[in-house]
Length: 234
Image 1 (tube, one colour):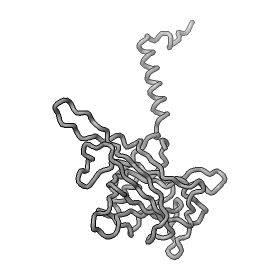
Image 2 (cartoon, helix red, strand yellow):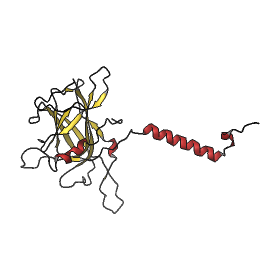
Image 3 (cartoon, rainbow, N blue to C red):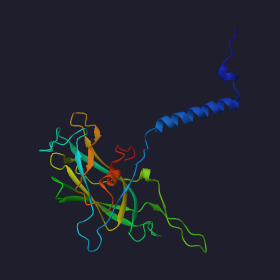
Image 4 (cartoon, rainbow, N blue to C red):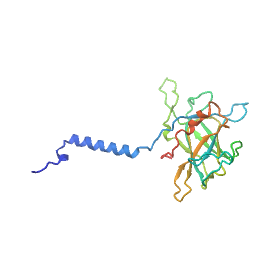
């Protein structure tokens, strides 16, 4: 008895349905994990006129799985900070948190490094622009406030020397804002495995109690490091 080919006996519409289903399945599997949430956010604020110490967030960066030795703070492997990425939200002033009608507002985010958590001297600056999308006003109407763009793609990178910064020397990092307040969604310190593979790894980052937080608690500032991963879009 001649067996019928199931595919040939299907109607054209049924075949099209299964082909589309397969395409969507493959697309879903291919992009799975490529875009991930940046979690919460925390605002870096500029120093107010006449205020004392500059607002800042201080990070202690160590190797993954490392527990600080109370006496020495010893780093057990020769690791280097090779990249520092931040996911930036809106740039805004204290007067107009949404940036007003100026979608081109910009600010400077400064990353300083040191051998201790009390004095920071070496730094790199990163100029960031407002990600608010400008909206056009209809004739005779007031221009609407800009709307935030998709924060999944707002990864920026500080300039780090090719050799990197040795964790045994520079284990403390300070983040500050200049010019305007900046909403930061995430900061990630990336190193390389010390073996021959040189595989990129996410270094462990913790918020120091010596941070001069502009508001909230250390737990609030920890939103800067609540989704630690290497973004595939960076």
